Length: 318
Image (cartoon, rainbow, N blue to C red; front, side, top):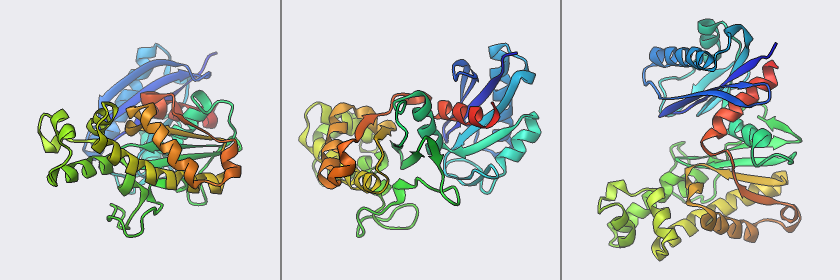
């Protein structure tokens, strides 16, 4: 009898749910905007799981369990969402609640951890035993694979690369500290730096690409201007790459991975930005751990999170 698992990538704006076979092949997928009220969100997850099982045309009895990747701080051992941006849950026992609702086993982990697991199993990480996945998007996060295993740390909070300090006198981060990598090099930081430049009377090419609307200027628009040859956009991204280079050099010197996989919306700028990051990393890292290092863009794109959730379910339930 063939069995299946469900993977859920739970985001602040959308939920990506998929049913997969034991080879990790997706057989049915659903994407919906995320509900913003606590009980509605739990019910939405339950409804989406039932719907994706029905869409695949399989019996619920053949589903071994559910893996969920969630943003923020997650206690993997209990499946509790501790703190999470953009979702109505604090210290929320998601695993217990969803198991009670669906009568299926559930595992919950941090989304960056599961993105690392997804890329390791099904993406750019295949063939590597030691890798670090780094997402550069609204924030900066990472997941660590050591000797083929996801490394969570003693309390499950390993991988908070975005909150390593790269500029001690820098701006204050949402976490309360100054100069975190996230506040210096995330997509949010890139957009903010561009808007500051425009307020100072610069960045007119960037502003033009936002139809003159300063509030519309974001990392994507800065990236477009950079790719078109705009020097001010290049300077903004060069600064972000400088700080990413510091953060990544620290990771490489500490962990000696064979692969850094870079994902998240900012990496959609493409190879020219990735090359800036590689250059900054090469200047800052020790020669020995750098010798065998590959730095690549992650492969799974929008499916990274859901494939990681599938991989978690397969690890735990198959």
